[in-house]
Image 1 (spheres, one colour):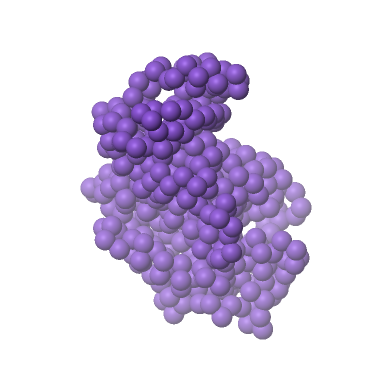
Image 2: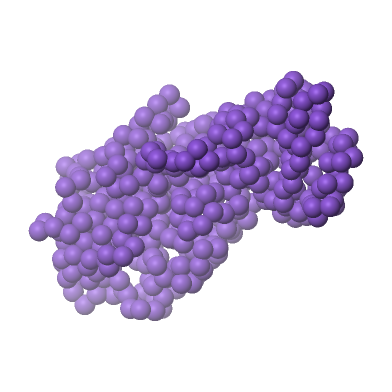
Length: 485
């Protein structure tokens, strides 16, 4: 969506929106419009909307009000995003092609104006690439937004926020694509194309290179697929000589469960089992797009988990890059096998100041936290606190769960160093406990289990049904809060 700025409302504007705070009707509106809003019980609550038609200069103009809630509320940013999102939701397929948001007299700061636009743009994203028979009333029509009377400095703040929006959109694009379109090699190619000209360095390891490094765990997951595995690293070094922070993403581009085959109903959802890698790619695109003053590297382990004569069997033992051996009791507990080699390689290659992984790792985290929070595990209290705060600030909420030596016995194997699953209890914790065994030298590390967050069965405030882009804003906010001066 094209967003431009103007000092005044352009002539002949057909659709004009105003932002209204709680229990407040914007000044200067026609009496009939203001009274109509009151009669319709428009209160200015966050995300509430109202529209009517008035005559101005001999032309009929469509006027909308979008509620932004109490300006003194602690969740002001979220409320403003809801106001912008309400406009997208209302007019995206309305037949209107352009919208003017008149901020003159709204009393918004530059950051607050950008929040309105961020909500509007994120809610406007849709994945219609394969829908060829949409009815006219289903087709997206709204293509441009003009922001009139914005506070001084808002355009520059929006340019920064627009990079974040682009990162979220890239993640949503990757996660939404079917597995015959996004697989390990095409994931790499899409990133190479997307990041061209941004100033990042891209590193790609193919199967022979990973074999030479001893990545038996990651390669074991992908060996049953005709799609060869890849390891992808994206380096953005905008912070001088500081040690980099590394974000690692699980990229299982489709997960059948392997020989431990998943039930057929719902298996189509497993195209988004690369949501961790997707959010890392989108986070890196946001950081590169806004030229973040930080050294950040995204590492993505990319595999497809398929049942085949060459696939891993339950009971097989694989040797990870770290040298630790793993008894594979369930080939559907594959994400941790991908991550353990990616984590080890990232530590050896980049010696990070901290390392954070993102993965749609366990169904158990959905049982624990539903679709309201991602699960957070960490070996470092300070890192956990910073990620929790970044989640609160960004809206990508995380909730910390425990790690403890007592859980180790659940994944000890009688014939290898560990097994890849525990029992029925504490499934998300034992998965995190498994990953922790691959963290070396006291490196601060956190694991974000986002299985309940990357895909939504119904539309939310700033996303449509489908891919949410969860994790991108968390990565961006963590960098803003902790790595940039």
